[in-house]
Length: 123
Image (cartoon, rainbow, N blue to C red):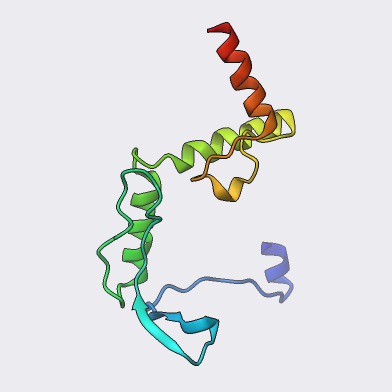
């Protein structure tokens, strides 16, 4: 990357600034703007509140801080699930969860169901 820049290349950079006001798009049409929304978590994740108590124009640094706090909260089961599933996938070629983008559903893959059945027979 550094060599490319020295030779006159370009690099992408992120510049923190004022947060934009976000709105729901009615029927996904950009011109029809509906209610103002704020950053927040997923309300389907355990005991965690989805409301981060941010204003619509909250600074980006505050939004990032709330995201970091939400993602690392000990009551949030998603990071542990993602890590275990990825480790399992890397070692055995198939994850414990069928679709990793739907961890809150925790739908087990066939291999995970087989492991659970074997564990039940031993107990």
